[in-house]
Length: 398
Image (cartoon, rainbow, N blue to C red; front, side, top):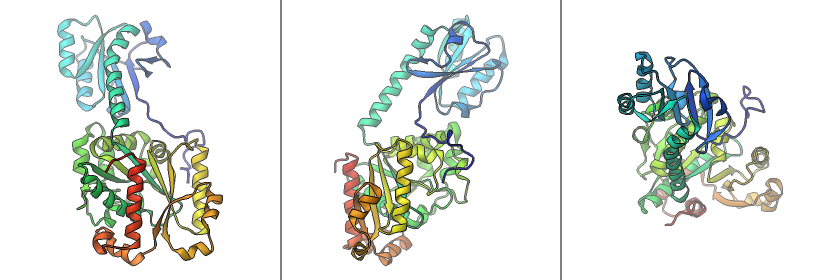
């Protein structure tokens, strides 16, 4: 379901691109020609405002850097820069007219990444942004060649047991990763009906909302303090204890949290809500692997087909998407054959998970893995195969 407050034009996948924000009192020098251009590979955005007007740190959350004009002769302007530097993690470049060396040093001590003279010249800005560009490129390369991966789990419809399956997969995956000295994290993004914490037997005191409200304070330490840890080693960022509107989250917020979780934990599983909104589609677009959980029933497969049609309409066919049939029973093949699934979805079934409701319920009630309840079982074997398949798809060596 698309958020009714978002039009067809506004509802698009958000692929995060860091910008450079310019906060100047006037477009003098080269500044007037910078709008809509790129410097050091970053797109620029010009904001005209007095050099004493407050800048909301939240506006800088997605920026690679911000160029902020500072008036040496105005204590209010200098104070604004100092307070902004203390409130944001985004790199600040101070811009001032003929700044003396003592003033430059004071701005650097206040938190400026660099100081450039006004009127703004393209060559000065290029030189100031080049180190930031190189740092971003290094981080991106590390993310791509490392083990940082995102696995999104979506469901054909509510009630197919996707969260129960994901928590059991998460437990198994975390145990396997721990043997290799790696970690795994599950983020419950079903902010209205999420119950991954309950199914893992956890009672976290903090949740996703605490991360979205952190603003500039969000860092790896806060993320780890917010997670609850299952005995398997799986880290969990729980959904809010009370329902919140889907549209209360933004793409920038959730993408920043997921990117931070990738750096901290490596593999991140996302339990996405049934109803689509801009931020959930954005996360899907940036996933390394997508598991679509369905049942081998006509109604569930029909909904799965609609999900796939939506994904194709957003030009996301390149996603590595696998079909997982949950609660599978061989008797169901009498009415729905694998060839019917291929015909309906345009994809083959990648994994089947045996139907064993009593065993799954017992594991959920105790917050344990299925293997701890019963060492050998059909459903346990299927989840183990799913774990191995996910690891192989992500290129993880075990």
